Amino acid sequence: MKTISVLIVFLLMGSSTLLAQVGINTDGSAADPSAMLDVKSITLGFLPPRMTSAQRIGIGTPAEGLMVYDKTGKTMYFYDATNWQEMQFERLWSRITASSKTYLNNTTDSVGIGTNNPVFRLHLWDNNITNVKPVIQIEQTGTGDASLGLNLNVGLGSGNYAIGLDQSHNTFKICDSAGLTGNTYSNPRTMMTISRANPGITHINHQSRARAFLHGINFAGPIMGQPVPWNLWYAVSFDLITWDEQLEYVAGIVQPLIPPPPLNPTPGKFITKEEGYYQINARTEFISWEYQQTTTPSYVSMAIYVNGFAVAYGNKLNIFDVGGARNADNDAPVVCDVIHLNPGDVVEIYVFQNFSNPQAWILGADFGAIPPKQPGACTYVSIHKVS
Image (tube, rainbow, N blue to C red):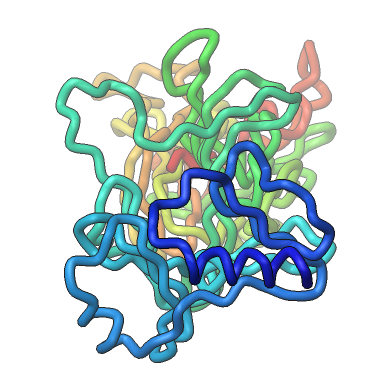
């Protein structure tokens, strides 16, 4: 304590300005060359002036850098030549022991970058009209993705979403998942892909959702199919599902041959789980040589039905024209359209024929043909989600 005692006496007796550095310690060491006042201790601390907020604010003409401990706010303050500033870093931020997690203590705070009046939880502000750089930059220098994640954990929209650059596929993506998902055509979580190698939208959630074929029942020898009544829009009973990405397709049941076919068939049904625009393609092939009307104009066609109502019609192919001429190869109508669907909507494919009474047939397979027509080659439906 000798050094301290001598220093106190010297300070009390002196009346002129001190020009030397001052060291306060118990080991007699000199002050650090960079400090005018060097206080050293391993058992005691530095105690600044303590006062209330009113007393601090009442200090007349405080010097820049003046420091006090505010007993009202329980924190340190310093004067920046204009205002008192709270030294509250430890009050604002905390770090979990032995962890890499640092967090803001007050969960109701708003953080501003570029603004001292943040009105959002994180408020980024840029008023430089010549600045063409992004306000936020996500940079990945490793082998991972440069992505931004979003999460909604309440309500109907609950789930994870991710946007960013997919490093492995060199694409920009929006995904309905916690991270960027794969690049396959039928990936259900990739909602949009933009190619960076060849700029442009590669696909917008273009998922191959379902494909179904008609196999049917035996018609004649090696020919399989489904009977279709005369002059009536009639549902196709797609009974062979080859792809059902979201388990949305319900296979149909082809009714036994009881002329005429039953009025209430068991059709193949696609029941949507997600809202969006769906591209629906379908084709059928009528066995047009089984005809009975040889002079009356007649045709075959097909349509897309949603919830029991026709929403899109395909081409209308004449089997017999007004002169009674038969178009033997004009027997395969198609339909293709993009339709907005809501969850729970029921999509069915209907066909029409008025050339054979009481019934005609649509083809599922013809193993007697050369080359053989396999199931799916003649009557099928494919459904893709495009948004």
